[in-house]
Image (cartoon, rainbow, N blue to C red; front, side, top):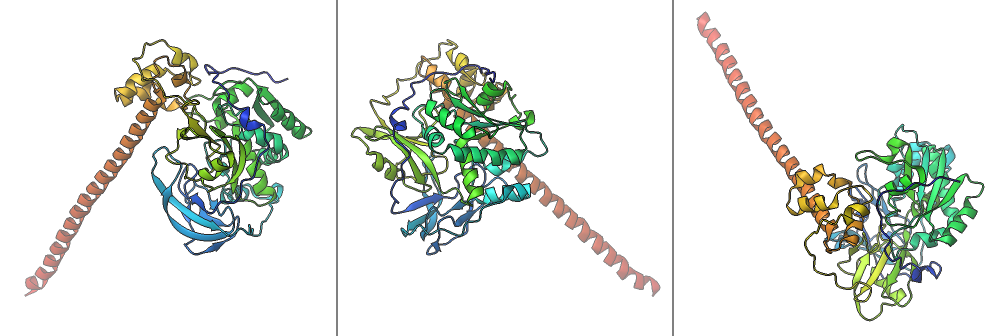
Length: 480
């Protein structure tokens, strides 16, 4: 039996998972239109390779990966491209982004799919196929998976599969593990092959007994260890789960791969399986729709589906006051429920005043230390709060601001109701803005200095040419 370890801190917020986990995964009807953002992964946006008026097939690439850290996007169904332009997207800023709008034709006509013989493929070619299939982390980080599957000459001893799903309300991974355990296991086998990992360990919080049972049955005989881990938030964070399962603490500034561990979400493993065994790109994802709705549940939604369309299936109740994408701890208020489902959309919580009462006004910090006790990253949240509030960003960085995973545990336990995470996010954004400004200023200074140097060089060259010409003109006169 595997020995389990503990990480510092953590909290136990109410789970609110039972309502949405009672029904099997449902397939919503095809919406009237799909809006597919070109930037729904970490890194560079995909580059549109279709134009308005084009007819596309299901699974056809419509956005090509641009640069190394990028991933492709695809047509979730067959139909006609209505437009390529800026549309509202699910983002805390409420700003628009470049999207491709597709009108489905209802035929669901696929492109020709080509399964991959992955054991006999060149590793780089296999990773490129996953990049072109749009496979990214579906646990929320949406980092292009082909990069994480490149060990870069580092020995990976342990491949960790993350089925913890620690945040309240979210049950999409729970239902995925219950209903598609074999797909996850097959995807894990492909990942193990790519990373040449010595062992595969799947961690699932112990409040998901049916998922644990289904995964143990599917993993039997496949050298994959399924482990029930204690239910605590944020036990599903990659560093926290690695600590619990292996005892390895990933230091600040290092990656888990430096210590021989790589971590993927179970939904990512399932998408790797479908991309390799069937040639299918990522066209849909399971989304929990819960909160102030009549029929909470999980929906296998096409990427680009309006969130309104999903909420309509669950039947929004009276008294709704907006919606959250993600969980109540790390999610954000949607600017509108007309925005589309993207690869990062794991949950939509319809809010009401009963479920999410108005937050009390913040009061002064009393330095009780509860935030430090709950911090899973072993930080000093109250100090980070003071430095962020005072805009002393240098000092905030000295106190490891960027080690904060923004889990919200500190805000949850704060008796003064201070929105601590909001201050940390503000400080990070200001530091990034200052760094961008500094880079721009350095570039402008370099260009200015280069221009002055070029002008001086041209002046010298011109003077030398004039001197040479004068010398040549003087020679005939000397002969006379």
